[in-house]
Length: 400
Image 1 (cartoon, rainbow, N blue to C red):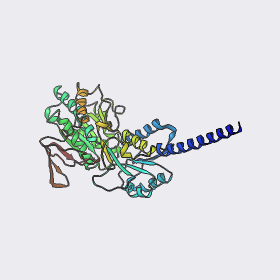
Image 2 (cartoon, rainbow, N blue to C red):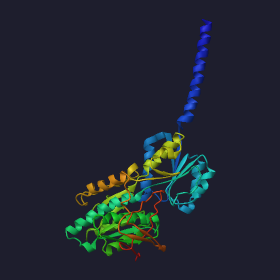
Image 3 (tube, rainbow, N blue to C red):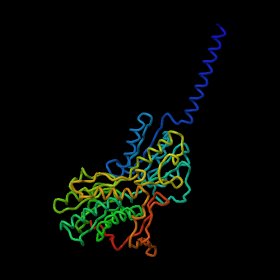
Image 4 (tube, helix red, strand yellow):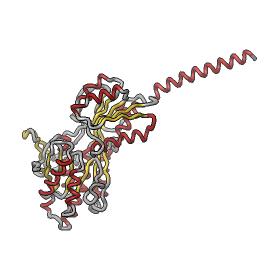
């Protein structure tokens, strides 16, 4: 009997040792029990761009609950990035996400090898050597811009058929921050979407030379409206242009096409549709990768070039929000769906295509013929189309 007790005790001890060994092995290979995630915003959540980016933080909280702690820093200018970046890394963040354009991130990443740094791309990353713990990502925004252009074009077509405007009054206005390729790519895709429905449509672009200024953006939109624009869109960070359209709509119809955040609440009478980059698919996948001790690019779904990833409608990185059925022309949803399905299937070369020649505004000798088409985001997540199609796009000065 004594021998049986000893044998049983030894067996239990062996089982306990093996169980602990298996637990440790599973813990090492199966991932982390807890994660600390950092977010650095270039603005605050009252602005559409940052609000849209912050939805990914909300998605992490919903997905992982108490398993994840989230630390955030808001209103961080690009040239002030170093201190909050170091602060979050030294507080033990396993992964940090940035929506700013500072090059400080890639410079400091090697100093914190235990942290993964994921930044929205701000330059052509094709062939650029970066630290192993540095990653870039961006949704292929031109796809949403083109589809929203179709919605705008159908509205203009309806206005022409109802004799509210004439063919030669099919003028679109665009409030733009800076003449970067990202901005130019977006508004070019937008007007080409409009012209796929109304070939006579043209666009006036007004630069504010700032990403975020309610007063300047609203003033620029008002100036474009005064010049006869019947559709306004933007690549800036505040609700100013939407408010300008809403205040004007009582006098004459001017419709607004949003970006990043629906404007249906602040501009219910004029808001037509919104396109947005969905940051959630990438950020959720990156968090999952870190929790499970995997390489981010092994988990993320998208078009990958090294540690740089992009995607469009095909992986849910771009979507259309809040088509206003009280405002939109009949058949708008179907026309949008048709284009979206083509983009989902990988047919993307029809967006930047037509009998157009674009010119680099900084180098008149650099031109691009779009007869055979141009494929955006082919090798990098940052948009590179930077040519002005002067036959259909006019750059106007902000008169305010």
